Length: 447
Image (cartoon, rainbow, N blue to C red; front, side, top):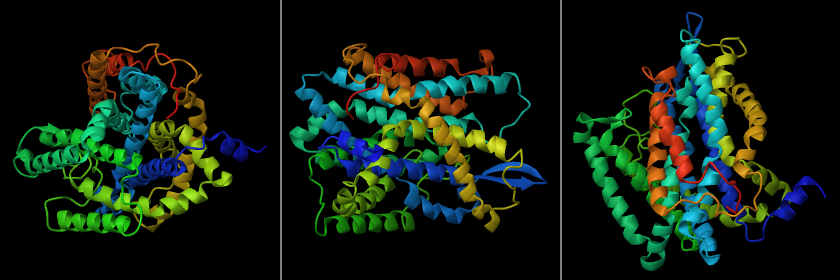
């Protein structure tokens, strides 16, 4: 029996292959977008880093297509709903369930930090005069997703209970209303207040509100209560697109659906705005309209096998694609492996294909080495080992999210601290991992 046949035979009959395919496609599109937007040009023969959305503002239109994180949160909600329901039937507690989810989600960060923290320490203390084209802040930035996704995952037992008793509409309505209030403050008085990164601090509230609402929509997916037939998907596309036209064209919302690095210019993702709700509507309509036909295609072993293989290490792919970019850029351009252009011209665009291919080859070599931290050495071990009380887990979620914010803010280098490393952020990060049971046990278990 060939590899594709074995993968097909090992896939449970009730596995939602389409859902997995959309999640894999979403992350791969994120990876591709991150690799393309990093620009290196020549200034008097010296490589200079840049950011495509700032250097060529017209490319911000493309973010309407490549900002697909809403799909990952939405389908993650469907996965979490099904997973928690199965756990309840088995008699598992919410703490036991969250421990298993946290292990699978967060354990891939261990090899990442084991490589990046010593590397950052070496650069800061041994070669402080050497300036990287792209630094460790770029490499560590993908951790924001884990913090946001962990938050909505930890709330799943509560939000799913609300969904099952009262429906999701009340919570969705509250989140929409509060998001609009936060956006109003962000675009008016918030601009003169304190900052969260380089955006108004009040906007940080939407990190929880927006992703929680989109995750809640996943419960409707799990219950098959979304308009999947007839004109329903088309209506979602038209409604979402119309809202985007109004919000961006006549309202205060910016065009770009991703942050513009190093800029205080407004954006719709970092932190998120209500514009992501409209974009989610468009994306949801598209995948609902494709679901039946693509599900039939994915029944073919040859098409399902690559989805299953990539999906098994999806979090590893996501976490390591930016460190790979940092490594490749800081070798390829100074060593002359990639040509330098003075501007983002036709030659620069033509070289994007070999650039992406080079990053892809390196990532393909890295993933198998570190993937075992995601899948775990054994899937049979009980979740009871290393499970902490719900109160401690709640504190651990806060610590982990705070640690991630600190690591991203410092870029793993903090002047004035021993070895110039952000020890307080690292302490909060690992305390969060411990409190969630992610430092012990295995990452196994059904999704």
